[in-house]
Length: 143
Image 1 (spheres, rainbow, N blue to C red):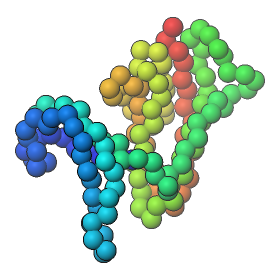
Image 2: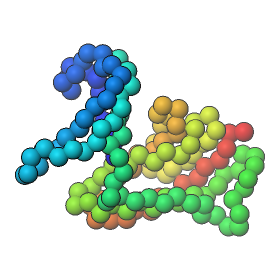
Image 3: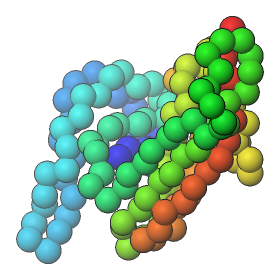
Image 4: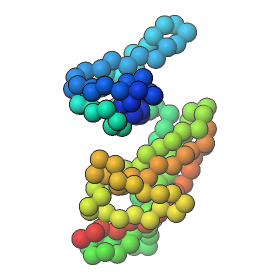
């Protein structure tokens, strides 16, 4: 799980955030409940802030090779891949799938845009409430 925001005045911040610990609470009927205690790195004004909150007990994923025989182990051959993501939440979710280092991999993910985030090749997908979605895509090494 990620807590994602931008360090700007519109989001209630807008000052340099120093490195250090942070404690995140969620309001509940029984009072504030501890969610996570992530470590914060330095963030400049205007930067995206992404803090790992831990693993979800409601979201599971599995990625695997989906082609015939063994996957190609060298060259720039495309590999057929499949990601299966299950969401047991009562609400839809957005999932970020990290595909590998951007300098080492290329991906073709139909109907979804791949991006580079902090050096990783990623794609973000939506999964409806109480559902499992299957995504077929292709990857290849750049070397």
